[in-house]
Structure formats: C-alpha cells, structure tokens
Amino acid sequence: MRKVSRRDFLKGTAAGAGIAAMGLLAGCSTGTDAGAAGGGASAASGLTGAADELYTLNCPNNGIDYWHPVYAGFKELGKLLGVKTSYTGSVEYEISKQVESFNQDLAKKPKGICLHPITAEAFQGPIADAVAAGVCVSTFAADAPDSARIGYVTSDNTKEGTQAAITIGDAIGGKGGIMTTCNPGQTNHDIRVDVFRAQIKERYPDVEMLDNTPTNQDADAAYQAVMTCAQKNPQLAAVFCPEATSAQGAATAAKELGTGIKVMCCDTNDAVLDMLKTGDFLAAIAPDQYMQGWMSMWLLFCAAHPELMNPMSAKKATGKNPTYIPYLDNGLDVVTAETADYYYMANYIKNAGYSSIEDMLSDGNP
Image 1 (tube, helix red, strand yellow):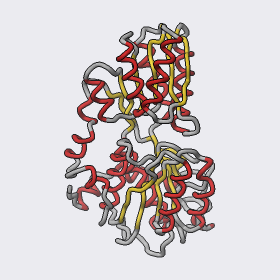
Image 2 (cartoon, one colour):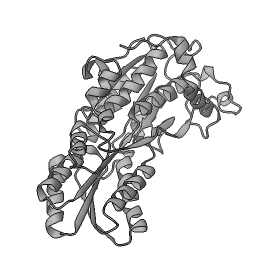
Image 3 (tube, rainbow, N blue to C red):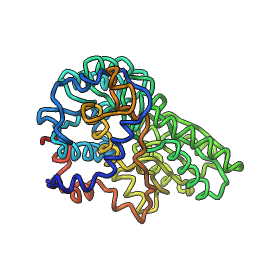
Image 4 (tube, rainbow, N blue to C red):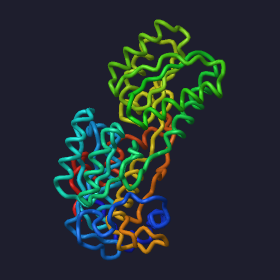
C-alpha cells in the first residue's frame, strides 16, 4: 500500500483547505448539535481523528465498478486523517435493501456515513434518524436535498447531460433520431437524461427525439429497447444512456444492427472501454470518482469535528453544525478511444498501489 508522510499530506492538500473554508462559510444549518456531531466525544488533534472513528461509504448495487475508485479516495484520505473506513451498501439495486444496509451501518455507530441514495424520498427518514443519533451524513453522485444531510459531492449532472448532447449532436451532424434509456427515480440519472433531451431539442432542431425507455441499469433491457426502437424508427442515429451498464446492451444492439448507431453514456467500465477502443462506442463521460470519495471523506470529517472550526456565524454558538456544503463539484472527463487506457480498473488498481480489487475495497485502518 502507498505510504504518504504527514508532511507530504499537508503540502498536498491545498484543495482540502479550500473545502474546509467553504465549510466555515457555507449556508444553512442541518440542525445537528455541534457538540454531538458524529456521535462521539473525542476531539480531533489537528487534522487527525481518533483511531476508533469509523466512516462508511454506502452504495446500492455495490459490485458496480463505478463505486470502487470513489471508495479508494474515501479510504485513502481516511488513512491520512487517522480514522477507519468501510465500504458497504446493498448487493441489489433495490431501495428497501439499501435502506436496510444504511440502518446496519447506523447500528455500528459510525462518525459519518457517505451515501448514494437510489431515491431521495426513501432516505428522508433514515437520514433524519442518523442525524438525531449524532451521525453526520453526506451524499454523493445522487442527492437527498431536502433531508438533514450536511453536504453533497458530485460531478455536475447538468454539465454531463449538456456535454453528452453536444458530443452526440455533433457526431451525427445534427440529423436523424436519438433515443435515451433511463432509471426513473434516481435523481442524478433523471437530471442527465432530462438535460440531454432538452439540450438536443435546443441545439439541434433537425434531430428527432425518440423513445426514453426505462432499463434500470439492465444491459439486456437496453439491448431490447434499442432493437425495438430501431425497428420502429429506421432514422435512429444515436443512443444516450445515463450509466454504463445499460450502455453495454445498447452498444451490442447497435453493433448487431450495423447501421452506424452511435452510443454514449455517463460512467465507464471495462466493457465500455473495450468498445471504445474497437470503435463500437462513441464516448463516455467519466466523473472524477476518486476525488468524489476524497472530498466526501473531508466533508464528513469536518462535520464530525466542529471543534476544529471558529465560524463567523451564529451556527456553532447556537448548537448547530458549522459544516454545510450543499453542492461540491468533483469534475468530469470525456473518455474517448485515445484516453480509454487510463480508466481500466486493473490499470487504476495497479497505479494506485493496491494488489487487487479486494485490497482496494477492504476496510481502511489508521
């Protein structure tokens, strides 16, 4: 595993200092009691927490590649901060299962939970319960904006939908038809698709917007959706998917049809990268997953340790947590055949100094 000295850490975290500053100045409070935030009485010593502090990253369908570099960033900053981390969530993409996993995390009395909620509504109550128990909760990639969470880290889903629309619209010369797949109720996917369709209509008036088919991250469902749409609409020129799993099925269908249909998605996995390199895929948008996890860990640590802060506000004096960051952008890349090699999971694991995916996803200890 990589070893980073405290000196290098302090030299290399100017971005972290900026995030802390935003924590001091950010908007409204969650109402979390500052003395109890994180559920423990221990205080951080400088930028080092107590060795028994636990922070968890909770994801639905947690075998999906996307989450793994997120946890790597979360875990690595946790080590530098001297705290424990764990990778949790549900194996299934099912709301009740993820809520159950969140409650299991809560029972372990962590300092903080970083959550990717399938839907915002399902987590209003669980997040409120966590905050009432003194556990800080943040969200990433998908949000629960009306909950008691203390912050949200994501790539800008509006930017993702817009960039995808421009990439596809230009690639098809502003002509033909485009279909989309969707996963209704998952907020980040909803935003990507809605923005994509709106931007295509605004920027490419000669393009016909076709089906918007729910596939719920199922490659087989996406394959069938593209086949059905192509039969009804021979002008089908492109497909946009808000995530990588459906895009695999869409690209397989496009290749079999042999009519030059271009496929693009958000997120990457090895199958998508392979298709990029063979020319069977147009492009993919990759949020900076590592920084998404790194920033989320920093946000939770700040929220769990209000004693580190002296805000110029009434929050701390009135028993509220001074850390509240409603939105923090971790950035994104457009991945093409020329840059695909940088995004393979095996390459990332090796370059990050881990021996295997199991090593990367293992519990982090100070």
